Amino acid sequence: MEGDIMAKNDPGSKVKNKGLYEQLRGTGLSKKKSTRVANSATKTSGKKARQRGGKAGSYDNWTVPDLQRRAKQVGIRGRSAMTKKQLVKALRAS
Image (cartoon, rainbow, N blue to C red; front, side, top):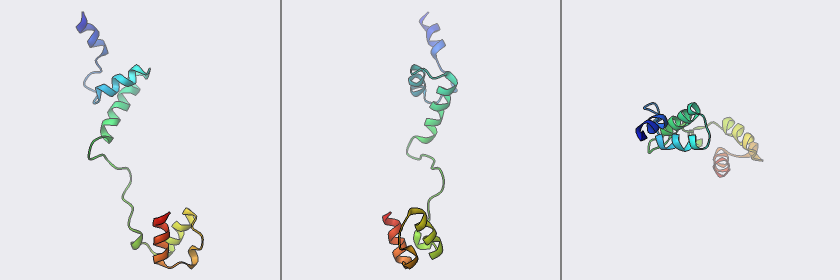
């Protein structure tokens, strides 16, 4: 009889993180959503987690107009009078 109860609660092989699945089900989430969240959590956990987007390039490789444009976005004042070295320093500090 106990095996029948466990079979009903067993999420099956489609769930990768069964502990998280059970925790989510306990909070009232649906089976479908709990499965989706438990499976997506395993994709981003661990030592080699997939990074979203790319790695930003060094400001040293940017042109002065690009640095000024970025400085404007960040809100750095006096950017038009700055040298490339000063722009890089200001952007790194922001």
